[in-house]
Image 1: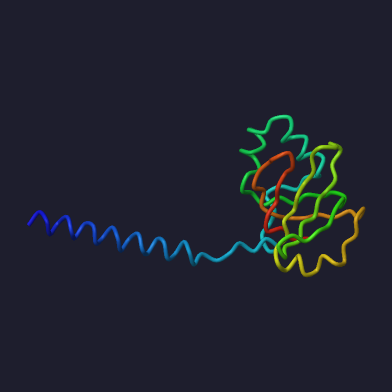
Image 2 (image 1 turned 60 degrees about the vertical axis):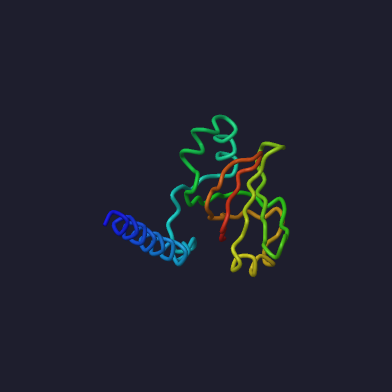
Length: 136
C-alpha cells in the first residue's frame, strides 16, 4: 500500500512538472515594440548610474524594458544579428544594443553619428550596458 502511494505521488509530480515545462516552453515572446518602457533614459545617464553603483543600478534596471537615447557610434552584424553601439561620455563604456530580427532587417537605414532611441531588455553591465531584443 505504501509503495502505491509513493508511485502515485511520483506520477503526479511528473505530470505537474511536464505541464509547467510545456507552458514555460510555449510562453509567448514579449513584444518590445508594443510594450511600454519601464524607464526612458539617456546613454550617458545610465552608464553613469552603473559605473557609480552597479548593485543599485542592477536592482533598478536588470530585466526591465528600457528606452535609451543616444548617438550611434557603431553598427555591425554578428551571427546574423545586428548590434548598435551608443556612444557615452565615458571613453571605456558604451551601450550595446543587440537587435531583434525585425530591427536587424531595417538597420540599413541607420548611420553612425545619428541620434536614436532604442528600446530593449537590460541584461546587465560588463564595461558596457547590454540591451537584448532591441527595437528602434
